[in-house]
Length: 277
Image 1 (cartoon, rainbow, N blue to C red):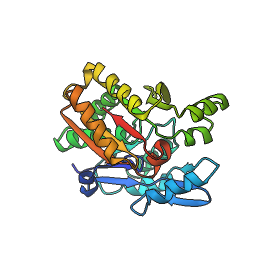
Image 2 (tube, rainbow, N blue to C red):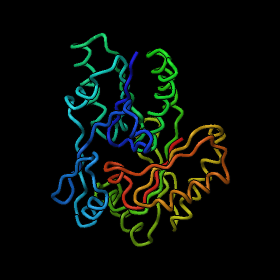
Image 3 (cartoon, rainbow, N blue to C red):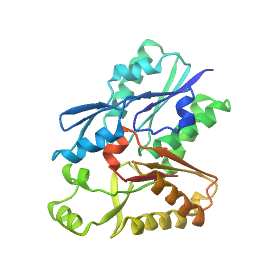
């Protein structure tokens, strides 16, 4: 049985995954300061970051159409789909609409849409889990069960250098925006089990915030033997520093570093770090 893994463009695939034809990426689009950015191979991160800095308005994103997903589903017996959190984007809903259309047109094809309840590095880990299980010949329904269980146990944490997009999007109250802006406070954040963004802590420096994040990971004994993914937005050196900090305190089997695409760049902004395990 042939299979493919369809992901939205918030899944920041590793270079090796990008070369593997089993992965198919469906792009979202971004509107910032009057310009439109398609989150595909044409995406220019530097242009988007500059555009967001110049604009007083928050950047907006548009999910792929059901037809874009439906086109991506063609050509395999088993189709696994990974989207960013359904509470952050309509991408999951579009993918589900496409699944229903596929079910009507070609009921012999198996399609399952996973709500990652995460983004960026979290989606990468879900896609890797699917690849590992499906490549081993595991039946479709069992892959779905195993991966849904994996998602329920996965943790997503992140630290932001800049709060500008949170401020522009109204995720900070006016008082919070004034205080954090004046004190240059760095937020340590995470995702709830349902996939909502939540604040876990704060620090006066990015180094302190990253240390708090690593300490939280180290305190979670479930990380031992697992894979951790680090996604960075225009801060590769910082990503390697986080990797070293984690290696000093934790016992992961593998640590991957990936680069933020367009959608992750909108959420994380310049200098942001997103980890998942």
